Length: 155
Image (cartoon, rainbow, N blue to C red; front, side, top):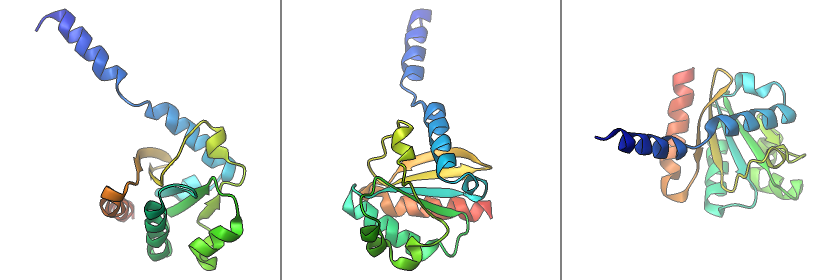
């Protein structure tokens, strides 16, 4: 292969890589503004924007209802919500008022320049973001299996 072809391919490959480091810094800063301490114990965080894919939000809430009391490293952050009474109905009072449901009241995620339009799973390892996956209807069950595998490996 000619050197110029290798150079062009390298530029294309590296310029198409997502900028996870920038997004990771923004996400960590937003989390710290919401609650300084939860990153130390979090293994997995599910961000739930209230007004996104209804199936994905319902699936995420259902998953949390079953798993959040079982797995102490599982957290949820609810952002872009308009009415806490509606949220309490969606989540159920005990889940909604639980210690590992964090409300982004000040819209720290949005202010950090992060646009979360569907429920998103943040995998944490030793206080750092390991991976980020958007929950889509077609891969929802596999995503939740991955969450459980990640949490079970961490314990």
